[in-house]
Image (cartoon, rainbow, N blue to C red; front, top):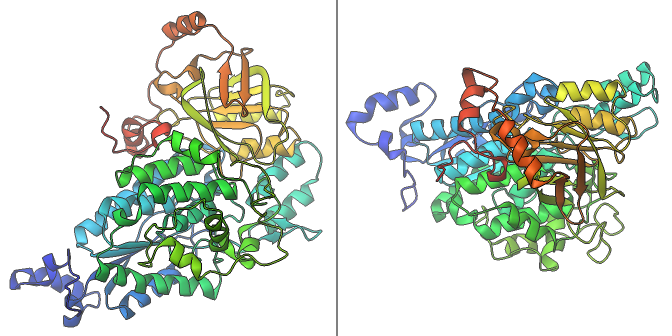
Length: 564
């Protein structure tokens, strides 16, 4: 015991004869008299065998528990769910992906609240684990640290080139167009994912891990320490120790997750060329701590932050490569030196961001993964907010690695991703077309399906910069090409994307940040009068509940928004 009693919540069950029944239950799982004098710390594990991203997290949780015990806490491991975006991609299962973020957040909040936990270490791997954990951390506002499960090592092709899961999605398109044979496709399938860890490029998992570290909610190095390494095990043990120190110092998430901390997170995402899913997740996390964050903040920061990272999907390297030259912390050090980060932000170390980065070594000399500030890949960030008569509330696009910044063409309209995918495979989509996939939003999908399958096939067929794709759904962090997602309002609630017809002329323009259907206001109004809202796809169950509760993508697709 320290002079300060850290049992802020657990004292509800650890003191008094009338709480003997409560304590009796904990004695059965290993608690002794001394444990009831310590703060109870939850270790939220997202361990699961359903995805390589999380298959190793049971071991990481054990290390976090060890650290919390050494730090003076009474730790308890509990689990929550995960789903694999890669496995659920391209079929009905993907509708459950974004809703799983809410299930994860709700389940962690539920356990912490019911068990009266005083502190929390949350460990996540696949894409929705991280924002799910962070939303719960924000809601509970008890001392907490997030630890990333780490990135997977790259696989190898026959000629020694790096492979990852996106390589497989694109190989399907290459096979369909005759560029590779069945044997080569099978080789890529069997060698792309060699072990545990999250998808290797600057896709959603690595994007969110980087954003959370930049926000100050992970220990330095957490974002880029690879999954199956001693560094990652130590990372988790230190997190367990550090959360007890946060309790002693009285530091809670709302002290750390300020508006300036979110600006730091957006800055790092833009510099690294991260996933468009960062819009959804950072908006939702900000909502959990009552920080006023909007799409306008992303656009404001994008304009002043250069894109400096040559990382997949549009670049050459993966997170493990970045780890070997200094990692995300070293990139942040470079950004801080360029006065692009708020160095005075508090972090889970109890120190400021600037104090943490003072102890970090700079990027290795001679590396070519991260460009110097005076020679960026692009002068501003690659994640755009687009608006126009097709997306009055906004839409998002990732334009990294593209030579073509604008396209105008005829709409090819589909009310589901499978229909659109079949059209691509049947060669019904031609150069210059604008594919519209609607009724795929938070309510209409429901669940706002990621569309890596169809975009991977389009790129594999050589159409990546020759056709456009617009949806009220969303994209994987592995997606690249002339694609626009998160169109809001979505079709299901009467958004203009719902009245587009085959042949309508559509313009995607990243330079003017416009998303336009070339129709008169009178024609759009006439079509809107004819439009009828379809019923929700699911009458009961988790997807029905989600569709009834979820907000617009422009507000983070949260399920506890109090509409005015």
